[in-house]
Structures are given as C-alpha cells and as structure tokens.
Length: 110
Length: 230
Image (cartoon, rainbow over all chains, first blue to last red; front, side, top):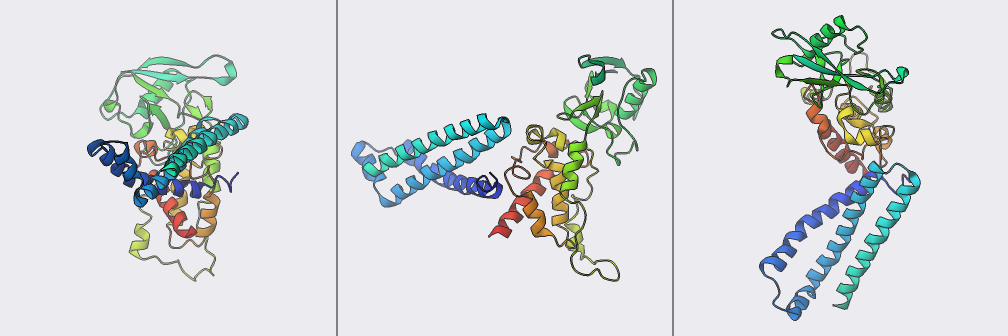
C-alpha cells in the first residue's frame, strides 16, 4: 500500500498536473469562449494542430491524475472501512480510465 | 456573564450536556479565572490548568467554537453565553479533560531531540545567528494541542496522521543545523498518512495561541522531501 500510494509521489503528481491544468485551461477557455470555432471543420482544424493535440492529451492525463489524487485523498480521509474504500477507489479508477480512454478516442479519430 | 460548560462523565452512563453558570466579571479576568470560580461553587467540574500564563499548555479548551488557552483568553473578548467545550476530536475523560495520549505518541514518534552522529565537541555545537534564526517560530510550541485538535485531517486519521504539532516539531529538528538525521527523519514521514494527510486547511494556524504556523512548517518538510528525492 505504501509503495503504491506513496505520499510524496502522489503529492508531486498532483502539483505537476495542477500546473499543467492551470496553464492550459486559460488557453482552452480563450479559444472556446472568446474565439470559438465557427463550425466543425474550424474546430477540427484547431484540434488537429500537433501542439494543440499534444496539449489536449497532456491535459486529459493531467485532469485524470489530478482527479485521482484528489478523489483518493477524500476517500482516505472519509472512508475508514477498508473494503468500502477499496471498492470506491476501484470505481473511481474505472470512471477515470473510461473518461481518459473516451477522450483519447476522440483525439485519435481527429 | 453566563457560561455554558460541557459536562460529561463517561463512567456515569449519562449523556453529555451543557450546564449553565453565571460568573461576575472583573477587569482583566481570563477564562481560566472564570472556570476556577465556577469550580469553587461546583467542585465536580473537571478541567486541566497549571501555570496560568500561557506557558505550560495545560488548559486548552474550545471556546465559542475555537481552540484557545483558557489562561490567556480575556473574558471581555468573548461573546455571551461563553460556550466552553473540550478540545474536539479527542476522547473525553471527564468534562473538559480529554485523553491526549495519541497526540503525545505522535510527538514522540518524530523524535523531538537532536540526533548528532559526529563525535560531540568538547563544548557546545556552535550555530551562526542565521542558523539559529531558522528555529524561530518553531521552538516556541508548548504542546497545548490546540492545533492538532482543530485539524480535520487529525480528526479523520488520528492514529496515522502525525498532526500539525508533531510535524511542526519534526521541522524544528529538520531545520536545526546541529541535527544529522535528516534522511531518517524524512523517511519516517514518507507514506500517504503521516505527513501527506495535511491539505493546508490551516485551522492549526488559526488555533495556535503562540501565533505559530504549522502549515508553513509542513510545506517546508514536503519541499525538503522533494529536494532529497531528486
């Protein structure tokens, strides 16, 4: 448990992922709210740029990592029963993996 | 002035209750003085106290929802009715007296003493003024427990999370230029619970009657741990 859930490693990933989320979220908000693509081809063209695709893949990974560490923290604090905690951690991992795979699938099709 | 004081005797089997008392306020009166007056009229009331000067750390209580030292809490500053409860999150032994053994165990676990591996010099181990200054804001802790018992992370994981007081003490020795057990101290704090249950809620900073900042100390430990791991 200690090696898998190392405190320093989780804390470091949370900070690193948070840094990328803080940097890239304004880019996404600016593009989607202040300069939204006029139509699907415009959106497709923007997302298909290598830098944006890479940024989005990293964003997806960072979002899932950040959510995993945050969700894990909440479950470690509030769910003391080992079985219930394990089941909820498994559920959280399944949801996040499904979201990550779904997001990667969208980017792959582009 | 009206006080509502938490009363509970686990051995009696009766449920906890708040009991009202009225105390005549004098200029400069502290909460400890008021509790002593209450006790003079009702000797069944139990609470800890000793020095009366904010030095021994014995009389930590929860006053109107905030952990404070009764001996340095002026009655004039308190909203009426003054609700006095035991420090939260700890088992109540009786009335305002709580079991602090877990708190002290965590303090012992961080080895709150210098570990010097080199042969000791003939005289004292010298420090520069800058090295000594690093200990300011760390050594002043009086172990009253106001910080750790105000910490939600300590409420949820009291057996495994060291708590703000013990972590402040851990940083006090990590920051000491005379200590030579940095790697061992950091290793002893690794893992998901002992250090990393702190989410910088900062209740400890708000509660500390000595104005210390355990959250900053904990952040320094995390940064030091990261630096050592690279």
